[in-house]
Image (cartoon, rainbow, N blue to C red; front, side, top):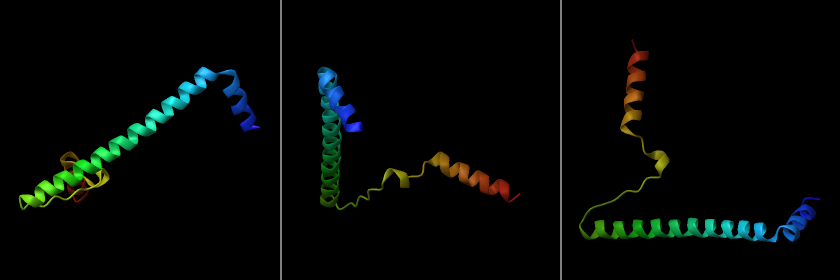
Length: 82
């Protein structure tokens, strides 16, 4: 049922279907390109740090705690202790 609906829309709305497919393809290509660029940047930074004798640690974004978050944690723990 769903497949027949898809095929019917592909035949009836060719331009719209083609543009949608093109948009999906461009989006996937952009994601792959950004991932490749970030991976290469990470390798280059690590190589540059190794040459200079430094050491870089890369953390996923969810593991980074902002200073404001630390302040909120400290404040809530000090208020609960009162």
